[in-house]
Length: 192
Image 1 (tube, rainbow, N blue to C red):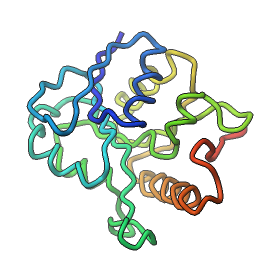
Image 2: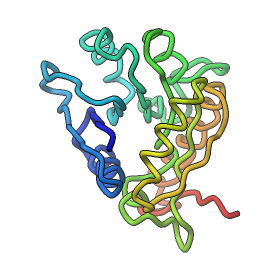
Image 3: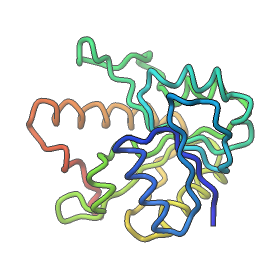
Image 4: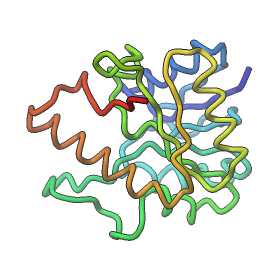
């Protein structure tokens, strides 16, 4: 059993908690409005909007040293809805890793919607969580925690450099759903 702390109690935080609970893991939630709570998890999931990362780093940066920190943010420019707010050669996850040099930052869950995590399906296919990061042990630990319940699949997408592509896929999926070209209960599936 792994201890997991999830920042955020919205749709994604709740859906991710269910994936981990299916594997028998212990889950603690931290509501971002009350950031005085202690981080107890070995894995810390940031199920918050991209704009909330700076406050979390400022308030909890020291506590995150040595922990596996999962960034699932999609740094969408919500003013224009026409791009990402990070440099073209970077990612929100890379920026977070630079701000938390003692943490083991990985990108995951940003290419799935809450509904597909909850159902475990994208259409007729099993929901797959893509993970990117530079720490092989952190990725393996996260993958094991995700897959323990058998509700979703996991694929290692490579180094943290791949977070940029994952964020682009997440952005595309969000814009398609916002434009009602796909539903918030659908998404991209991995077919093997």
